[in-house]
Image (cartoon, rainbow, N blue to C red; front, side):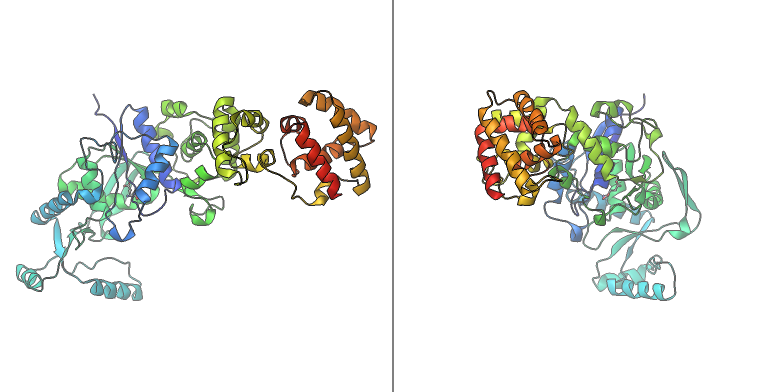
Length: 486
Ligand code: GLU
């Protein structure tokens, strides 16, 4: 029997939850869920200088919002904890000592100033950057002298000087690096903290990770990892490096492409299930057609064999389209719940709270077919909740009409609406369509003037339903106010 699949997402808390990182988390989660395995979160917080307050919470919130539950990690606990690297320093220090004592690593006493000079010199000579290995072969005596100067050393790995290191990547196939291109990387810094590369392999081994899924940019770190696994006598896990994410201009997805934090998408009214579907297709596909897949579809069908090497483009228009589809597919009750929340958050403060659920229940169906994000809901429906008389008078006057003809159209409409027996959508349509003919106007002209008068905006939900929900009294008052403007 093959061992249980154990995957992990290992974020560094150095900032907001980037959609690229969330894509890595999603793939690792999908692979674990598909295989009946275990999904682990490990916080890689060993870069003390780059640690950002609140970043861990932001990342965990982002994961929760997307619906990625974890079996082991912060909050969840587990048998392989602690799951935060800064709480595991002993382990790395012990491993570093072991590598030194077996001759695979060494203490380096070079000062930051010396390293700085060395780097400047390398740049000047157009040599590749990298440690010049000055401390690699220090004699016992030389080392003793450094110790007396009480310099706290770093621990560096003794990278083989020749030969090559190869590994098999599930997505990229065999990858080979020349050892001469790798320098003697630092394993343990002078503050006693490990570097990413070292802590990462110690933990992937200690936590019995079977499959490492991470972004393509870590391919170049992997030969170092392989050498470290070998030196430690550990069996490396399987590797699958996920293709790069690009912005629509085909450069690496970054800040200049606008929202890159998963939190931004939540705030802009994207549904987590749409986001999950969208992210899953950034580098993976079921076939060359299928776009819409539920969480369960994704779990059932995910495979590393269908992860591509080709960089994936983060196409916001596609995301928007997909989100619209997910919104339309929500049950009315589910949509209502989300509309309530987006109205609570998005309506101006003068809207009366708490919002009436019965009122919102009448409004929600009018927008469900129309919005691509929940963020649009309060914009499209604010006139249901607040006064809307601040529009410019030119908005009232339809194409090919003037003040006079608009005034007449609204005046006649007002009288007829006042006398209408029943103020429901059907009766309103039955009244207003023939009225346009009678007034020798196109329906678009009459409805346009009325729409602006009762909603204060040009884009609004369907006119008759909107008027019915607003009610006769409000409509008449607003038409009166519009006439006052003309
Ligand atoms: N801490 C690394 C990061 O920030 C993890 C990389 C890996 O998965 O090995 O992405």
